[in-house]
Image (cartoon, rainbow, N blue to C red; front, side, top):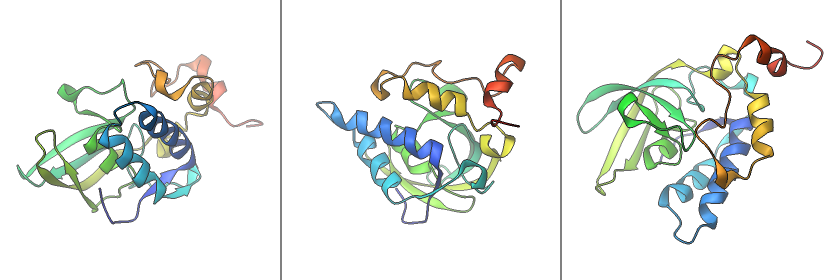
Length: 175
């Protein structure tokens, strides 16, 4: 968690709000669902095309410094079901992921590790942000509206580089 300002795209905000709400409905609410809901509640929400390029959004690739081991690491922020710690794919529904969403380069956040220890991280750079690369994911977000948030599957979003058949579905209407 952080007291610093957060900026989140409207598409990410809506989808993440549904994911956090689904997490809050289960019998034993994971603390990270509460943290994500709190972070989203204080975030500045902007149009995806207006998201600053130095802000972590969903599927952003970024470098951060872990304050405990003083090491710079590269990671990607992903939706639940897409995480893979071995390749640095961090779920937004994990304590670390909930602390990362909406942070900009230079900002720091504290998060509680699985051992219960509090750790600090600082965002060094955003290497890739889908919004800046033109992958606004309208088709994927539209598909998610048809699926309950609690029923996420690993392949529930389109790949980062859409095939030529899918490009038309991702382009703005009339363009």
